[in-house]
Length: 169
Image 1 (tube, one colour):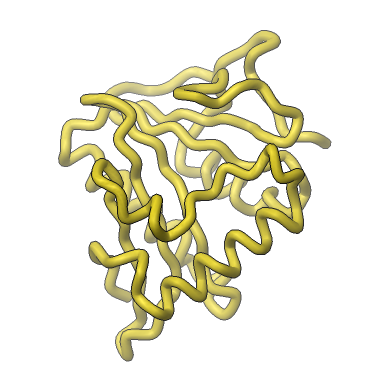
Image 2 (image 1 turned 180 degrees about the horizontal axis):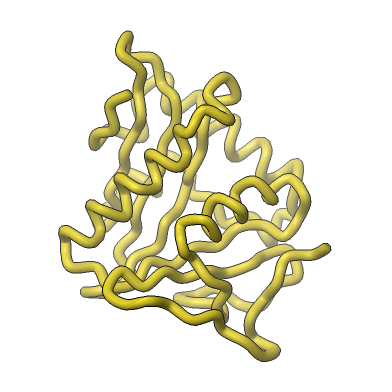
C-alpha cells in the first residue's frame, strides 16, 4: 500500500467521496453533516492523501485542514468498502498524523458521528489516542456529533464536563 498526496478531483476519488457524502446524509440529519465536498477539499489550507494498492486501486483517503499554526482538523477519512477491516484506515491515520507532526502541528482535532454507523471510526480514533473534547473551530454542541483531539507533543487527558460530547450508547 502506498499513501501519498493526491487530488480530491481524481475520478476514482470523486466516486469514493460521493459515496461518503451519500452515507453521511443517509446517517445523520443534514444540519449535522460536516463532510467536505471535493471542491472544499481542494481549497488552500487542506492537504489530501489517498491510499492505493500496488496496482493503483484506491483503498481510502483522508484530509488535514489547517485551523491555525499548530492546530489541524482530520476530515474526510474514508476507506473503500472492499478495503474495510484490512488496516487501511489505521495506516492512513498514522501517515496523516506523522505528516502533521512533521509540519509542526501540535493538536489534531476531528468530528465524527454518534450513531452506531460511526462506531468503527470512533474505535479507530480512540485506539490512536484521540480523546473526547469540546467542540472546536466553528462546531457547536450537537447530539449527532462527538469531538476528539490528539496532542502530538504530550500525552493527552480526556476532557470532562457538559461540553465533552459523548457517543450515544
